[in-house]
Picture 1: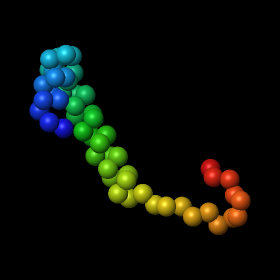
Picture 2 (picture 1 turned 30 degrees about the vertical axis):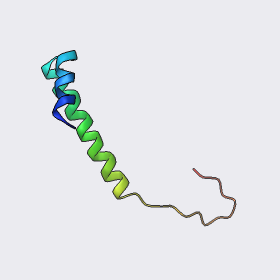
Picture 3 (picture 1 turned 90 degrees about the vertical axis):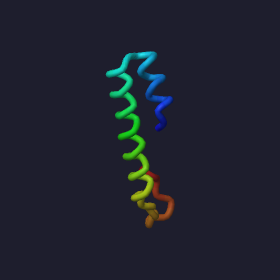
Amino acid sequence: MDGTFRRALAVHIGEQAGAEIADLIQRMATEIEELRRTKVSITRIVPGGEPR
């Protein structure tokens, strides 16, 4: 996330709120990347079994 994004948030919703939202988005992006990296594929063993 670049500084332009953080500055835009600060201008529109205030310095503290903008920083909090930018930090939250950054943490969520990191978590999503971690989930993608460690994703495990599931192979169904029962033919015709419905996914859950």
